[in-house]
Image (tube, rainbow, N blue to C red):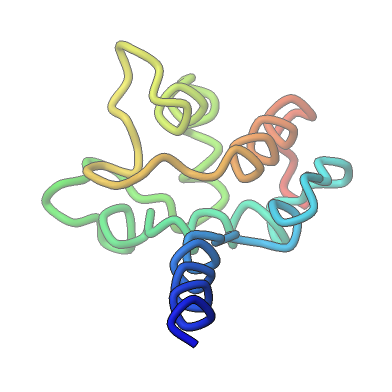
Length: 120
């Protein structure tokens, strides 16, 4: 009886460590085809708490907004967006004081930028 209880408790401990942000991470796939600003990029920015600082108006911590397409495109054109979300040295790592975005979210943003960052 004690052994079954201990085994059950250990199973709960190990299973509680299994966490996935999305179904894509669960199955190890990340669909970066047909990434669009309206369907993907805006959700990624919202879900990664970017709007907490880069909302409208930007907080005192953020010098610019990421609310509109023009706002985001300006950061893409300046070369800041990819460097910031990848935590590349020389860029302000974003989200600030938070964990790095999931690799799938980063891959989607990079795919969107590589396709010319269209307003789609």
